[in-house]
Length: 366
Image (cartoon, rainbow, N blue to C red; front, side):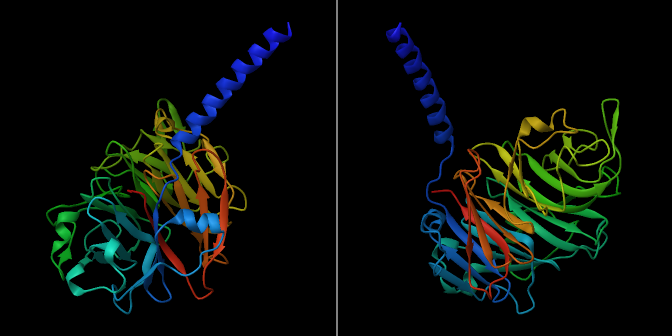
């Protein structure tokens, strides 16, 4: 009998070991470069490997400091920095519509040479959110399109979709009518979703695009009406379907936990989208593509601890690292979640007290 019992325990132990190994294998925490935009200096702090920061539990001096890329009046939109792993470019978007592309970002240190800089202006005249504030930016996995949120205070919103091939001529201006430019997620125009306060955008797998909106009209899924303000949408490059592929509550967000601002990040290695909300408990949420069909009042797959003022986040893509920063007391603190697909193992690392983090990006392509 003891032999049988031992055999059963051994089999169970092996099974648990295999499950554990499978989970850990999905969490690739290999090398990922980190870029931090400091609004105080308008410079970019770059560390060669976020894993070193996490293991050392201290940020230390940046591996590189990149300067001179932006005008003197440049104010980065919240989350308005995106890394292009395909073209090795870094994109910066100001609140007022100045768009900067820094080429050869891996090799940059010190002042950026003019040959590696392209600056264009987004002219939002005639758009649904004209004179709005631009915010989060995201690049798709092929590096072919850049997505940028724009919204009026408490009101109309939209997402710019810009072919990166349009960003090759310095000093140009892009409008909604420019070739290679589209505007989706509109508030009221024909084909729009009647959503407002669009603060979050992230590019997912299979050409999916995720958008977060803090308010909007009623959404009908099947025969049920959903009226909660905050909603997280899954769409494609051409836009979002008004009454499909959306997570929101029937009357409030007590189940979905969606909340203020909703900066997004996407894990391409494990196919999940993260959402940052400003809340005293569980400010970081994770959802999976299957949650959007049929959608509706779906709770997050996982919740995470973090700063109550969490405002910007970024994921390493193929490398399972997530970083974040707050907008208040935590504006100079870097938060790092290691392998968030497996569990909540995070650390907070204070940077220089003069640093104000407005944008984050991870290069998980190595």
